[in-house]
Image (cartoon, rainbow, N blue to C red; front, side):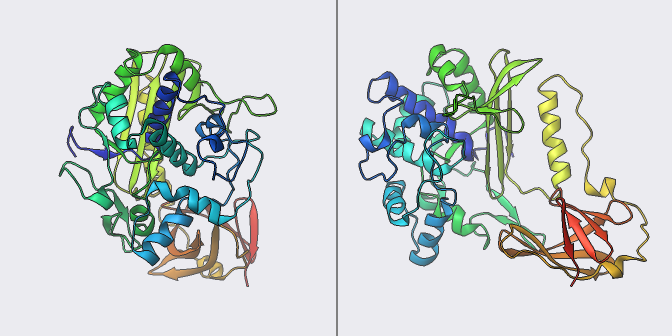
Length: 408
């Protein structure tokens, strides 16, 4: 990893897609409250506006995700579908809206794919070219571009490979991993939600461009940095009191004022861009390899955010640091066996067993089989290395997430 290494930005791309939309608004080519059907009459959800798509309040169906479309195309048809096919897929799915437009916030990549298609239609220029000419180049982002490296090849050997951790403990590129490749490769024809490739210094140039109003005026940034108002008249805020504007998460920091940013994630990839509006500081994080221990990754990430706020970071802590040393294993055999569970849950512990003197769990995670070691945190309490799960064993049962499951 070098200073000029080029990284895929995943959903950090959304702030650039939103910027492209704002430039079209400036040119008078659309209004934020125009309905999407005005430009794409085949779109099956009337009442959804450009503003709804920008703020993830469109009411797109709850189970409507990009993988439902791109994975089958790659696996069954051996092709990477272009973003232009998305409307056909939406129509053919027949899914009903999950809620009225503007009623609630629900994050979705699909909405930003629709916005990229809108930019192409109204500018009569490919999304990649529009962004490069009107956003990236004026910002001084000389090494940045929208790229589709799985579809078109890798134009530079400086592009980082996103590495995923396989079940056997080995790292492999995400586009050849059996688990992640159908989505990683199949989605590579999309636009708007991902596929900005950039460097750390180009993202610093983007921070400078915002401050110097090279692309967006102050007034336009104020609009984008304002959290969406829902139909009930309340400003959207999540459980961490973060709002969402146009491609930006909105945070109000007591010490540092308005802070806006966005995270990005793909298999083997984590990115973060945090722009301090009221102070001259910025935080940029690129990570292109799966973590082995979620606690250590999380405390490292939190530590970087603390440093960016002039705070002393907490130590990086792994599960090995907090696990009981030389635990009493006399009860562990009694914990082993199969456990009841609802079949439809995203996370299911099916069986607990001993292996090489340690306790393990066989589980289903989002429908995929997985096995992992249980690390002792207290007498009857155990944790998992790649998650924050805490499992507690009782009399003929196990408990996690305030749920209890009987031993069969």
